[in-house]
Image (cartoon, rainbow, N blue to C red; front, side, top):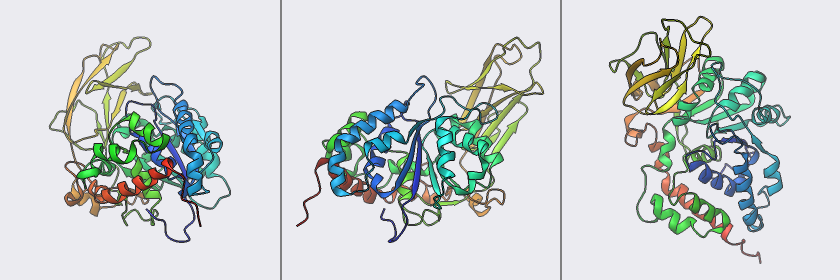
Length: 412
């Protein structure tokens, strides 16, 4: 975790879907705040979507918990940010998924990314994506000049499944962006590695988190076990060589990306049609019959719904990204009689190991999970590049939590 001596502190903005159905963002934010003295935290953006329209409130609530531990934390390091500073840099991002263009209207979050990227500070700005990609896509659309200043670490996988339009826009329009696309390696934080004794996902919380200040109790209340699936991004940035994704460290080791997989089906696919896991899959339908006023259509996969859009030529387009290797089935629900009830399927398979031998010239700064089988944990490619460090990063986190429990010993 230790940065190289003399290394400039890294500038960081975190974009999080805090307040959603998954507890890991809350846990990763506790971890972020405990390590915030090691970086220049320039923004926290609440950019989820769904029923909660203003989830910035969750950031503010967590800052109030941090405020209880702040007097003790300051005795350990003068670089812990003041609670009022954290409130000032907390921003509301997009509250809806991007439409078919992949971008829409500027948000407080996207505007903040632009403002910080355009500052006179010569250091790169690290943008850590823990949820949707909409605010980054909007910032790149509104201010493409900031691209050279950005270093992006994307927790993809399930997030990519929901932010398909934003991802598709970034991949197609900004292929020269510097980015780590972590679709599966992040799972090594809670899967694989040393799990015995006090390093188990449940036992660690009971023995090292519970009772460790207000932040520790908050973590325990959110969930009595470790997930922290977004934390590899922060541990990566705090490592010695973040500009070298192939070097490896607590946040994973990555390979140059091959051409970003994107498959378009103009006829309903079947399970015999194979795509790469985490690819963008586009389904195109040209329905027969008269289109009703205010036509709507959704793609339903595993009881989850994804909006379809009618293009200028009258075709309906649906995007989906399979988050695991398996056979997928879908159906279309619509008030358009030519779309309603349409079904299909396809099979997704993990990237072949030889893909890593074909880095893409179109994506010169794009990195992703190592598909070599020796670095997988079960089906999760690249996860072993994180899980191998589990004892180290959990012991370090346990030591950090002690800062929230008691002030630093007085110096003699």
